[in-house]
Image (cartoon, rainbow, N blue to C red; front, side, top):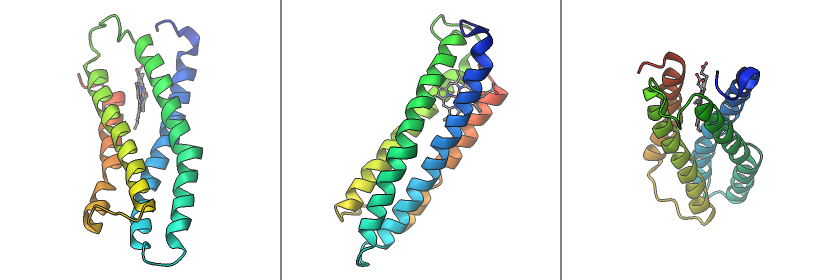
Length: 150
Ligand code: HEM
């Protein structure tokens, strides 16, 4: 059970709770970006989306991502990642995916800044397509964490 002992299940439960908050934010922000981009030419709209995006980032996205990483890395050390414990192939694959998901988070925040400056760079259809990235990542990550196929 590792160094966490009896706290292991509590840490894992807290990890999953903050995963839910982080994913909720990661589903909302790209949707906001679509509305923000569509409303760029409507007087008063861009300012409202800039405010909503900043609030979502400050209240949900940034704190949950930090907590998920701290608790996830604690669980990873507890599982023996640093000692090269065998059977953790799923965790290595999961780490690659969560690094990519964190990169997506950074990209979405960066794109919100571009929209705030009135400089969209993606076609509306492409922006809608990249909205699907967090859902796809969540499916793969949850299967790796729950099924542990390798
Ligand atoms: C951000 C960095 C993350 C790290 C370092 C990390 C690492 C871990 C580790 C080591 C465990 C414990 C597994 C065990 O003891 O059996 C775990 C559990 C879990 N993680 Fe993560 N995780 C991260 C993010 C995520 C994300 C983004 C999701 C979902 C989208 C997720 C979903 C889960 C689930 C569902 C479990 C519970 C698995 C079970 O029931 O045993 N994690 N995570």
